Length: 435
Image 1 (cartoon, one colour):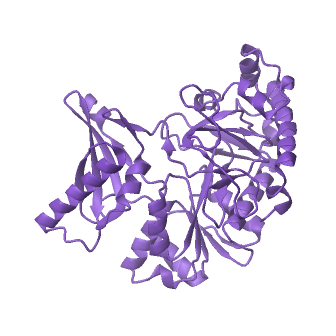
Image 2 (cartoon, rainbow, N blue to C red; image 1 turned 60 degrees about the vertical axis):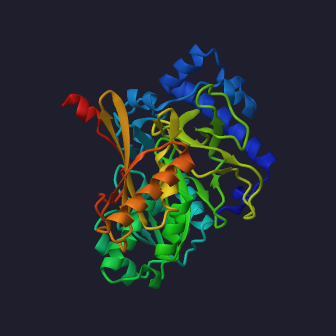
Image 3 (cartoon, one colour; image 1 turned 135 degrees about the horizontal axis):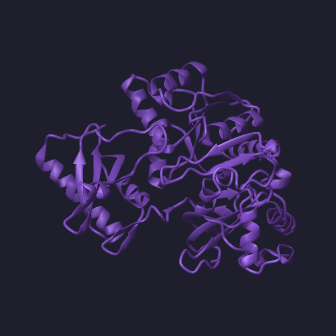
């Protein structure tokens, strides 16, 4: 552990600390952020009346549109002169959301990412290659500062230029890789094209986040790269990477609960659910200074993993994210997340872990077709074998998800690779309506 006195504190001490910090934060945002004063007044809430964690259920939620409407600085709780850094979401689903960091926020962030690296087994003796993008995206700089705080040798290579990544990895003796899970598979593919077996290099552990990925994909990454693959979680509105991380036991992501209060709520009723039940993940930042957020609805779907972890950390664990409620596809009345399709494909022989879900309009009906790459050594020109494999993929998806979809098998490396977040869903319905 990087901070064992905090990561393994008793639950009683932790909850007392959470209540103290929650009360302070609620009073802070009421006084300093007009949106929260308005929300609390409309709800008839006196922030100083909250004196237990159960009282949090009476506090209004924050949603992404709140941050968008406050663009760029309307959610800041400090003077602009106290902000030393801004980051922003990609804006792929609308107006970008801006988050600001004080020097204290940056210091806390470095600690959270140092905890992340230590939890997966990294030490000051490691060489950490940060292949997340640097810039307004939080991944690169978040991992960078955590690596330096841990005391490791840090390679700030950023994303892209995969052949150079591999050359640096080989020449500099990289032992730890930090990037998106889909990009790690691309690294393995490109290395093989270069005649380099990644498994022969010193690389031993990877920290992967920024997009949902399945347990079967973990198996593929660990096999292809010869490493231990650690799942990490974060989002820019809360901090960036460093909100939660798996430890070496790889059985749920420990939430840094001394800084982030987590709830799981029913997405329909918005009522809290019991530990172990699935729902939408909600976070309250307890110590964030620049842009505190209260009961932020992430749209991510997960659950709290019951029980204790053998690592000794007392922070509760969040199960791997199933998907986002706003990424959910409804196929003939069945709710399907892209990550569930990935989980199925990863267990089917002769297909690669690269796919896209293509949505189109056929008449007045929505049509779903899953494009799946065959494995590099599969005989793509053998019609009978191709048809048999297609039937197998269709059957596996139908059995696992209780819904049938059309499947199109495509040649190896024909689906576009991403050096950042993989684009899993291609929605052509809007283009067709406008044509």
